[in-house]
Length: 222
Image 1 (cartoon, helix red, strand yellow):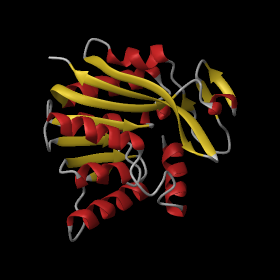
Image 2 (cartoon, one colour; image 1 turned 30 degrees about the vertical axis):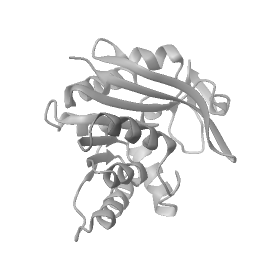
Image 3 (cartoon, helix red, strand yellow; image 1 turned 135 degrees about the vertical axis):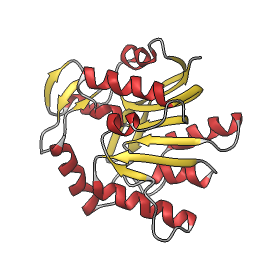
């Protein structure tokens, strides 16, 4: 985990907008679905980077919080949110933490939505991913939303680097290992806790860095 933290600290120190300067298409999808149901609510992002997507939720009236392993990213995300809301000094909406630790610190049933854009591609340990999924279910209210974007096994990145197992690749160059998902693996995240409302595989990314992703929308049962 320290290796992942150091890698992203370096990335974000060099380029705070490494993953783009504006909100992703997935954030726009999530906000659109949430606003159809009711305005406002509490949204938490796991692995929020420098906060482009989290700021988009905040700009549309949601109370937001999040986490990222990179303290550099967290500082930039809090500055971004502070600029949006006129907070002086910036409040700690985003905290340096791994997803599981962050989620376990939230009150049960306190979230209207949990959001994870590519975070699960870093969850290469099956047991840890299962604990994270369970913690998301605990933190969501009944009927709450879980938005998941993850790179697919159809992504060209599967063929770049050392294959460690089915869908698991070490890209090399100091970058962290990545998990790529099949339809069965992504839909299987629902388990008994969630109902899969929407699953779609499609190309995404910039021309110089094309990816293929799954967009998954799950609802908390109960």
